[in-house]
Structure formats: C-alpha cells, structure tokens
Amino acid sequence: MPKQKKIKRKPGVCVPWDEKKKELPKILGDEKVVQKVWEDIDTLGYIYIWQCLLSF
Amino acid sequence: MAKDIEQLYQERLARYVTAMRNEKPDMIPIRPFVAEFTAKYAGYTCQEVTHDYEKAFAAVRKCAADFDWDAVVGNMVYVWTGLTQAIGMKYYAVPGVDISPDVGFQYLEPPPEKAFMKPDEYDQLIEDPTGFLFNAWLPRVSTEVSAMGEQTSYRNNLSFLKGGMAMLNYFNAFGKQNELLRTESGTVSAISGILKAPFDIIADKLRGYLGLVADVMEQPKKVLAACEALMPHLTYTALCGADPEKKVPITIWMHRGCVPFFSMEHFNKFYWPTLKPIIKEIWAQGHQVLFYAEGNWNAHLKSFAELPDKSIIFHVDQSDIFEVHRELGDKFCISGGIPNWLLATGTPTEVRDYCKKVIDGVAGDGGYIMDASAIVQNDAKIENIKAMTEFTREYGQY
Image 1 (cartoon, rainbow over the protein chains, first blue to last red):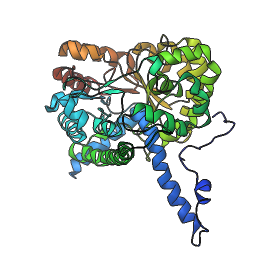
Image 2 (image 1 turned 30 degrees about the vertical axis):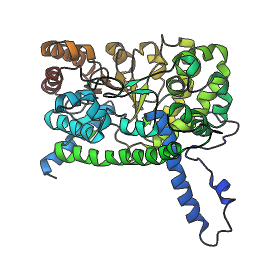
Image 3 (image 1 turned 135 degrees about the vertical axis):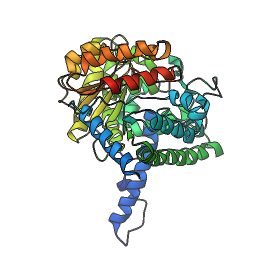
Image 4 (image 1 turned 60 degrees about the horizontal axis):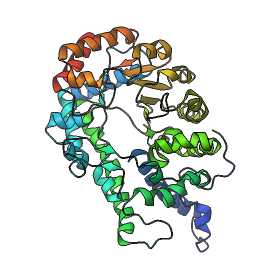
C-alpha cells in the first residue's frame, strides 16, 4: 500500500477515540472499556457510509 | 438438520472450494449468479424481489431447493430498494416505481455537470475520503440528507436512523438466509464481502464515467492520488465482510477500467497499480477474491497473471474464455462463460452444446465453475437454466 502523507481518518474510524476523549471528564473507571465500545460503535458509522458507496 | 442434507452441504462446499483453489474436485461445481431469474422461477415480479428482500430470499431458496446447484448468493438482487428509499438514493430506477414492475432495477448516472463529485474536489477526497463521503457525497446522492451548512431537517435526521437500522436489519438477515440455504437444501453461500477497484468507484459513484475520462487527461496526478487514498478504505471494507473461515471469496465487481473504456496506458497507470496491492493484501490475509470481470478483459490478462497463484477466481463475462484459460488457467480457477444471450434466446440443445464446448476447453484439469457470463436476470429461459445445470451434472464428472 502506498503511504499517504497524512490520513485524517483511518479506515474503520469516523471520530477517533483521542478526539472523543478530550470531550469527556476524567474517566474514573476502566478507560479501555470505554474506548473499545466507542470504537466498536464508531466503526458501524464507518461501515454505513462505505457500504452506501460500494453496495447500494 | 437432516444428516443427508448436511452431508450434501459438506460435499458441495468441498467441491466448490477445491475448484476455487484451482484443483480438481469430484465434479464441476455449479454456482450460478441468479438474480431476477429467481423471481421469474418463483412467481414474483422484479418489484417484489427488489423491494421486499424476504421475497427475494424465498425465491433464492426455492431455486436452490429445485436445482442441483452447489452454491448461490443469498440474494443476488442485492440492492434492496427499501433501504435505498429510506436513505433517498437518487441513482436508482426502482421496479414498480420508476420503471415497469417486471424490469430489473437500473443505475442512473447523472450527466457530467451533475456528477456527485465536482472536478475541483479531488483534494478534499484525497485528504479525508470518509469525511468527503459523509459531508459532500451523501447529501448529493440523497433526497433526504441536508448538505453541510444547510439547515437540518426532520427528514435528514430520520434518514440516518432509518438507513442505519435498515442496513443492520438487512445484513443480519443474510446470516439466517445462509443458514436456511444450508439446512433446507444443502446449498453453500457463494461469496462474502465486497470490493471495487479505486478507479472504478470514482467512475461509478463519484465523478461518473465521462467525468473520469476528462480527469485522467486533465488532472492525472489528482486521479492517481485519489485512487491511492481510497485503497486502504476499500481494503478494510472488503475484509470487514470477508468469510471468517476463509473458504468463500470476497467479490470484486469490475466495471469500466478495461480497454476500450480506458486506454491500456490508463489501465497501467491508474487501475492496476491501485488494485493489485489490495488483492495481494487480501490474499496475504488468507482470502481469495472473485474477479467478476464484467465486459471483456482479454487485453489485461497478463497483468492479472502477476498475482499470486490461487489468489483470485477469474469470472468470464465477454472475455474469450479459451484465451483466459491459456493465460490464467495454470494459476487461477475460472468461472462462467455461458453467454446470457444464449440462455435468453437459445434452445436447451444449444445451451448443452455450448456448455460442452466450454467444459471441453477449460475444465479438463479442474479449476472451473459453471455459471452464466453475467448475472442471470428474468430474460433467461427456465428450460435453459435447467439444461445448463443438468448437462453440467451429467458431463462434468471427473
């Protein structure tokens, strides 16, 4: 794969966790759980738009 | 599940997979990509199977139960227009709404001046493909979605909710459909996952064919950069839908990247350098890709031969299947090659004769899957599909 100079949004990502995390208060519990769930659901948004383009 | 049905499924799966790995199974597998034909056979209109996917699924299962096919696609009338209507997609002619209920759905390509991506927007696409799709492309292809900066609306908000839920509903339904195909008739689900070449998708859904023809002459560097920017996303999306067991292939639907739609120079400059690495990456992860090579790709067979052995299955539409076999037969499985015009206008005898010619020419050492040249629509005669199936079973034993 050719390397792009700058990938603004990586494959599978609509709103990166690092960006979302800045909006949240300090996470008192397990940050990894919050990150994983955020990223899993975020990927559904990504799949939605790319499937719209490719399949429909 | 009845043991004999499961045994039949396992035999068909082994037959299909063996052929796809370019090896010799017990007999030639039959894997017709039947679309609106299923409606004709099951007694539905094109409108019914396009707009009501449960009817489309039922029609496929009826065909799978009645024909001795090894593998089928759970719904080859893939575009469920209930979903596209919820999103408000503009580029379809829907059976029973825009066109006759007995005509398959149509893609509508806008004139160049109304293309869904403007010629000066390549930089936006290159910088952030996902953002461009959400912010620029979707509002243009949808009757419901508001453009960035425009006032939002009830219909805008609703389209994302309905579209997202409908897509999830539809994709999840394939799991049940595939299981029913297995348990009711022992039929294998033929493919899993979707891929398109970066160059093709720019023509298909962004700039349009005529727009891209102009762009390759006027701004070739931007076109190449855009293809490169799309590559990781198309790879990711293909792998997201791939068969976790790595048995059935991801399908690439190849449209207008070949000569004479574009020149050999353009193929070599744009199409192939940005597709080949995707195929190699997918193969490195253990998945084959079915090249559904719509049109005639004979001019490009030497390029395809550069790919790793067994990494693809090459489906023949209007390519010369005997030349395909000479060029690629040592490396890849071949499928298709039975002309759709023959299935629509010929006689069962003519169909049998053509199947014999293809089997004799390309299937002797295995590595061949029987199928029509292109997706089978409702113009195909039922007796001709029966002839193709029955002859292959009789004559296609190894």
